[in-house]
Length: 320
Length: 261
Image (cartoon, rainbow over all chains, first blue to last red; front, side, top):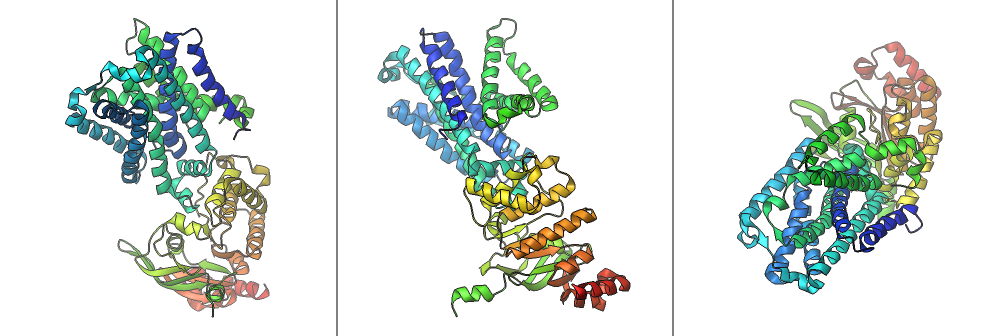
């Protein structure tokens, strides 16, 4: 793997994310890149399901939200350290989603997609009525929890680097799966599940594994995200908008590609940042996202990377 | 007698009273036959006789309502398709099922990776290349499956199944829709596969081809076994002529052809 150029391309991206805001202590750039890192994490992990196995998951946000809840709860109620809480959130959500997965992955196509929305709604309804997690008013954490990280100003940098680490791990995970036997099996399932099974791909098991794997890093990202904000409530944690945006990003960049999805996430975040800060368009990014999705599905079903590859087929050998 | 010896002399596949019903339709009815190691067994019968259903029962797409299927000493009745594939049983489809957006090599690599040998990726690619070569797809190895012609897709079905290095290969009308040159080439490929030690069960409507290829033939009608035997005997069986061949002249011709072969 170390001899493959793509390994070093990912390393370079991580290095740029680390260095760019650190040089000159640029807080504004840091915040923008932090959000880009979150989008890249969510979209890359969604891509494992959507782009590789061909299953549309509208509920990827549930991993993010549940991860946030588990992390905040452990930090707040049991005084766990941030690192331990994040690991617990990642593992807890992966195990939960494996159980969900075994149940709903028997469904295919639109039925599966609907079931994933059902999971979001179900989990949200549960959390809203779950008193240990503050019900519908959520959980606030005191700023004191930032003390172990060296005060709130330094904590924001620590959290930022953690976001970048989770993003890097997501990219390497996508890459590692894609170039593995497991990944080949998933791609075969994505193309034609019945034919794949007849060729010997253990489809039910593989789908449950990848669904569970695609939950781990988003759960950690959710933990970091809500820890950073020191507050979590059901309507933020389980907002379907973010799920939909992740799907738009995968389609925009080119589902099934590692590069395209990362690039799509970055571009989408930039666009969103511009539209959010511009006074004329408040929350207009969702309208744009909708129009984008429509145009992509109609005219560029293979996304940005499909276009790039058709122009420069040789890049296929370098990029994944 | 040791277990190993029993395995070597025992049939590779043994069907015992296998039945499958779809609602009111008895697709396969108490069917029993064996496939010996190393033979080519032809399966013929009119449309709707239950041939493809039988394939689906053997490789686990459907579970039979009753009866047992034993493959290589292992009871595979009702096992899932991917488990059956792992035991060393591969098949092609009458209606081709390519992994459309993957290359010919990738299609075959899937077969090799998840087939009997459970190969790691790098070695699976080598096995896939061999299968591609044997089926004559070398010049199209990096083409996407969707870009192939129908004849190419048929060969890909075969290549992918072969890459799995199966002990038993089920061929479902691999010759249908091919022109005479392509048919001839494909027959050569099938013979070479058998010579490499793979046992074959083949469904085919091209009578000349199946009569000359098969060592034995089983005839199905209404899900039941109508006849079984050497190609020449089967072609001369009045019941078979009535149910399937229809034309006594064709039967005569086939009998003669098979006797020469």
